[in-house]
Image (cartoon, rainbow, N blue to C red; front, side):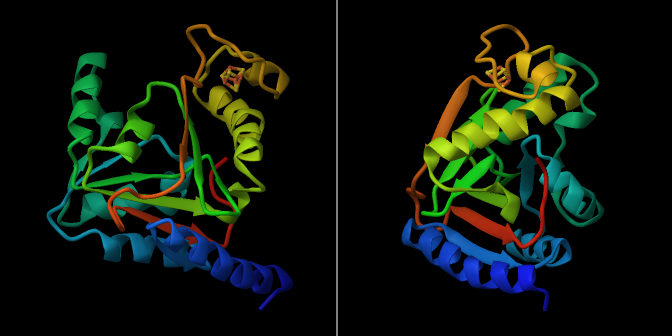
Length: 211
Ligand code: SF4
């Protein structure tokens, strides 16, 4: 075991305990491959599954695995036009399982998310009966404020480049507190507990994933 693997293994015990205190189901997977297997194990076959925009989910290959299996996957990326995309997004709010990452999480076990449209944080708060949140250790933040800073000054500048948004962060690499059309920061949501015990299931991964 490398020093980092050892450190992550130790740290994960503290984090998983803190997540569980907040009524989240929580697991630690040392690798992406373990995380993919855990996610597949958590989702029963024939489930209706939707997902929010997430590089972490993509890097895991989770959607491909579900689409090859016996699952009903709502894939907004396959929409042929904006109307169809809107329809699929709304259907996703009623999924059995909703998959996403979190922009950040705190050492105390809270999730920090900032969303443009709001479908991702909407589903996290209410709607789908189960939410699976998969996140790499790189998303660890000291506290809520630090998590918001990380989201707007590490994740958003990369996401706006990926999404070809003309925002200050896409150009300067730091948040310019924009309010225009391209902004991907409409809602800032701190999830401090799962209201329904275990509805939100966290898979913490001992690797860097997503932005
Ligand atoms: S508010 Fe605007 S500039 Fe700041 S992170 Fe969000 S999109 Fe980027």
